[in-house]
Length: 216
Picture 1: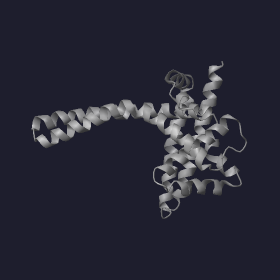
Picture 2: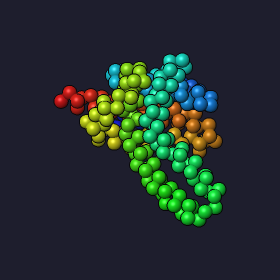
Picture 3: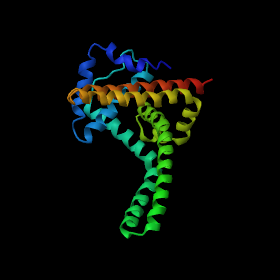
């Protein structure tokens, strides 16, 4: 896996600034913009898997919105187990807080600490699952492909190290994405799409690694 390529390939495209600033501007649209740019980043994933020599794509609002929506649905499904626990817990916590019962508050405090640990562990699991699920969604342009749990988990099991590198890469990219706020916030119009483009490239590379290992 060529980890460094995910951070450098963007600048090998002579139109890199235009291809980043347009998604950056689209991200200013509440909610819808983020979905479109998610779809745009998964087009990078498609291009990497197809061995496109210029994987940084132009933004296609309609097409990218469709892909981003599919990815959003996939991520929501994988988040459901957490939400099933989180929502009742928050309701019970609110009720306990209003009751003024010290014993109940102590119990809820302990339960809250346990819940925090569970949430952290589930967050780590999701950090591995989402890249694999997104790549499958992008390749087959299908929500169902991303929700084939057995195949998603098999990919991660086969290529654990590449997916570990993806997790580390996304942590680095999120830091890079936040750097734009230093430049009077305007810089995020470039750094945030750049971070998304990094992620898309990493997803594609890990998918290819998993497929190669599956054929051995």
